[in-house]
Amino acid sequence: MQELKESETPHSFPKNSKRETLVNTSPSPLLGSTLASQAMQAPVLVLKDSLTRESGTKVHHANIQASKAVADIIRTTLGPRSMLKMLLDAAGGIVVTNDGNAILRELDIAHPAAKSMIELSRTQDEEVGDGTTSVIVLAGEMLHVAEAFIDKKYHPTVICRAYNKALEDALAVLDKISMSIDVNDRSMMLGLVKSCIGTKFTSQFGDLIADLALDATTTVGVDVGQGLREVDIKKYIKVEKIPGGQLEDSKVLKGVMFNKDVVVPGKMKRKIINPRVILLDCPLEYKKGENQTNAELVREEDWAVLLKMEEEYIQNLCAQILKFKPDLVITEKGLSDLACHYLSKAGVSAIRRLRKTDNNRIAKACGAVIVNRPDELQESDVGTGAGLFEVKKIGDEFFAYIVDCQDPKACTVLLRGASKDLLNEVERNLQDAMSVARNILKHPKLVPGGGATELTVSATLKQKSSSIEGIEKWPYEAAAVAFEAIPRTLAQNCGVNVIRTMTALQGKHANGENAWTGIDGNTGVIADMKELKIWDAYNVKAQTFKTAIEAACMLLRIDDIVSGIKKRQAPGSTQPSKPTIEQEGDADTEQMIPE
Image 1 (cartoon, rainbow, N blue to C red):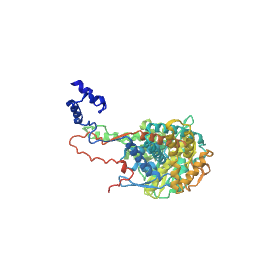
Image 2: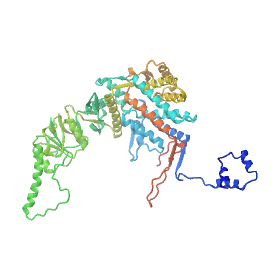
Image 3: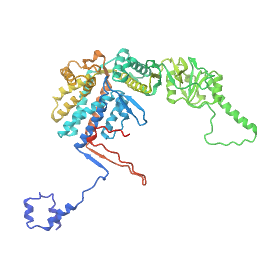
Image 4: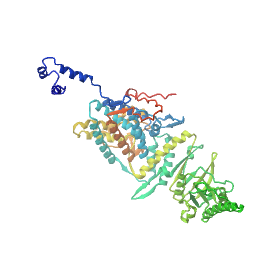
């Protein structure tokens, strides 16, 4: 009986095959029972009820929609005619900016694919500091052109392969059209940094920010040997924002400044020319015991002895320091009243409780070495590079300046401006400008700006696509078209006739004569970028292309989203409300912020 049942499994023959009717001429009870047992079997549950799972093309479409939504948010912030975005952050503060990364950082986004788009602009910001907006626009466009292929049932890996091929060829084109420049040619460098900031809010202040950025980065550049320059913006360039005054008062100090006054303003000198600076990171006060110590004193004189020991300890500390005849002692930790007295008696100014990072900057600026214990001081640790120490009052706060240093390796950029929001935006622009200056000091190569690079790449890829065999040809060609998103967006933001401008540009590039023809972002006129001095740093462009294409490939490869995975909850704790997951239908309608 068992065997008969085996042979009747639904897999062996099609149901209405001849053979089955032959065997079972009479309506057999056996057949009925097999069918019944199949119907009774419950469906297999692999995933819990709370999980939602989407798979296949639905996911591709949802991801592409989400990425396009992100790209559309910041599309208008590309180019010199860009709009600003105003964002309310969680604390109720306002951010007004058009820096792609700063905008996306503030957004709180539910869709997982959109989140990874935001990571892109962050990577771009950390790696090269500029091009945060173009990365997103380009990646969004790459995904947009891929949508058509997914509808035609192309396999995502085929599209990715074509994209990667396109990326390699695009980088080759970049190499071909880039030109090297001399880092010491100041007007050249200025033009470059200016074209980077041309898209930013501060472009209206002309060369000011570009000058600041160049001065700051050339100051802190360190030659590592083998012709390499290392520029550490984060560590050695401090941006001090002081509201008040005009933006034109901003300057790069040949040294450092910090928000501190001397310890005893009345007694200590506030202006010292050519000071000898000693930097400490130990407290100049009596050390208390690590743990609680009790001393039982029998005689009254012992008490006096104890106090005297404390005093002598501090006097010794100060004597060790004063041996080197400093004019200025700066410590990161505390400074007791007694130590203050000894120092001011010797005519030494002292500053206490300085930030570690500020201390490092002072060390770099005036050539001092930060010392941990006063008894280890040597003559070589004293900083003599500074030309002037003075304390100035700006607004209602005191700032100590250590300036006019010889060959400082750290500097402070002093920003003045009408309001806090303005200063924050200027600082962000300065950050970008300094990154660009740093990139060029590292790789002195330029490519044309104004969408010219992208158009050249696009034209070259279109020509190449005819030599590609097989199914990869079409996605490859689509990638070529996608590069035109950047010049197209530039044209849109200027408000010219987009289609006409684009066709004219494509015509100019198609015969490959001049790789430097692009859009003048202010007027939307087609012009030669070399004459207008609109340039981009080579590694910013290369990084933009790489990041955008790789991200597009990654998002295309996703074919399954399982959401609603909960962390194991401790018993008795209340369950948090389940976050709503956006469906592709409402991914592009922006969600309202609840009051």
